[in-house]
Length: 181
Image (cartoon, rainbow, N blue to C red; front, side, top):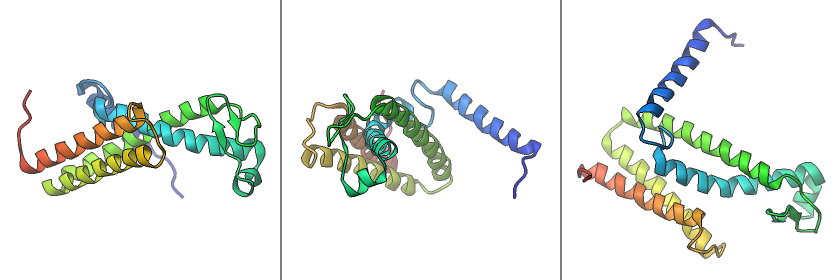
């Protein structure tokens, strides 16, 4: 069992102060993700937050049997209508709160990845960028082709732009091509 000591609060405050310093130095957006990464994180995480939140709301209000056995899903999240016609309250606020939580989680993970990759070879950072960009492009392609999402929609469009930018930056970083202003 771990008992908190005075050093634990010092570590927490130093991590928060380091994040605050990076936030002041950044030119907008979140310090680990940046402005573009923060926008992509918000749009993409909103898709997953709505799906997770809607599933949890059906389970909480109508029970696990309704979700897992009878297949009740939220069919209209804007109006809170389930697939069986029942009302599912709080779909909008739950999706909003989930988006904030997932974006905060993405910012934390980005900070850990950046600190991990700083001490590793250059090619590993490039591989991570290419892998992340490819995953965003795959997600957008799946939305466009399988889910029949329109191209002019913030979620697949942000995934396409964000994925292309990640791959571009990773290749440039690997080849050490300086960015022009």
